[in-house]
Image: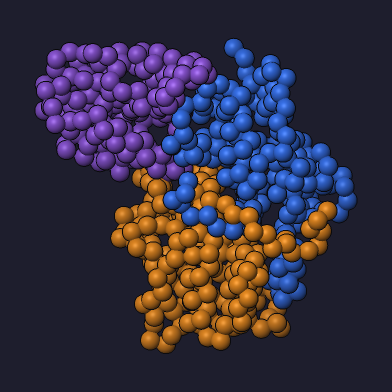
Length: 198
Length: 181
Length: 145
């Protein structure tokens, strides 16, 4: 896509962060949608800190909803993005030979398009299961929480959207699959793609 | 954890503007499904923009090493620069009010964040560009300027251009209490 | 330039079919479009299989499928199948000798570009019939040329 503009990725990561925030706002319909004018201290704080993930968990408890609702919507949005994105990217690409070539494309070109790097390792059992490992997954480097346990819980919010992207891209190419992800160590993420065999 | 309590490191990675537009589009489509009234959707988009703007301005300043704006005209130029920097879609600045406290950002024949969007008829009250308003408002607030932004023209609603009208309200002082004007 | 343009989705559902107003019997063209789909499936699968073998020439992995079969004296049918299984089928007048292969190639490429632009619309549900006026106008302009 040499003819379209590429800008600093920070904007994209901010937007991706905000996806889950907006979905939580939806659940809390008592909020009028306008953030109050913050004090200087709050402004300074916002300047230096990415969105506080713990607060989102508290809202969830208060509203008595499970994360699944939000996560499935996030995944659904990722699916839509993946579907359309792959059409754009493959506009001038030749026909794919087989499933493995498609997976390789996702690990290289697609990942590079979104995260400016490739997937570090691709493994497969040659029976429809593929595992992508990204050792420095960008979205995971952008937020802060207190404590390791909350990190893994919060990470779910940031890795669900890319799962959707992968599933959407595969679906557009005629491959039905289930994609799940796990944050393994700090900043590393593993995506597991299981292709539906008819 | 690399970023515990610190601003994200200045990184040079790039992302295609199409991806931003697609992600924003998917988000709008989802919110539209969940809220009944387009007016509520607009509020959410504004808030979304605000949250982004508040953080984006730091990144912008860090990349550009610019001094503080001395007047509103300079602010206008910075905003123009920011659109070019992040989205590759630079608006023209013009239509200044005689008092110099209001100007327009205009993108001719396009919308900077939704160039191929076509609205279904029942969604006409939806303000697709509202996120831009929120972002500019949030960014300005972080540099102590209170502005109000209106969408004067919307290309996606068959106007000839997308035009945002930015109006200066006042400077923000540190002593301003939360929630009071 | 074309008598009929059909854009069919990945499940062979019609996304957009436009027929030149000069045609007396549009039903025949619908029929031609749908029978063309079978050939398109065959052709795009062959190109996938042979792509694995070491056959020289990039045409086996080309999205452009070319002239589908030596059809009648009246019409020629060309097809193009994207990686996402969206098919674009052009039916042109066989007597129009001014029309070259390269023109057809360029036209389907432009169709593909228009489709991929249209798909950026978040309010369009991928795989559903296309309602976007800009795309309709574009296809009509090709037919009218």
